[in-house]
Image (cartoon, rainbow, N blue to C red; front, side, top):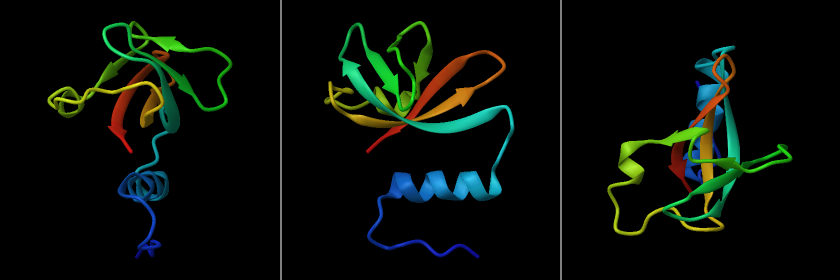
Amino acid sequence: MFVFDRHSSGVSKLYQAIKKVGYNKDVDLEFARVTAGYPDIRIRVNNMPIDLDKDDFFICERLTEHERPLAIGDRVLVAAFSGDQMFAIIDRF
């Protein structure tokens, strides 16, 4: 059973749950910040010295279905696939 702070964000809860029960040594969850918006979106993963451009990651479809796309400064949850050195933006918070 997991006990979460009811005041924490849904993304934080998801991150904690996956880290505890859904751990996969080939996939890590990381936080990132959007550093450039559409059409040439870029992100900076926490603790990485460089920005990643749109060739380095893909964006989950549900994040592209909104009128307000990812914008500069948005915080995102990213899945990092170690074998492929590829990233997926899972959610915005």
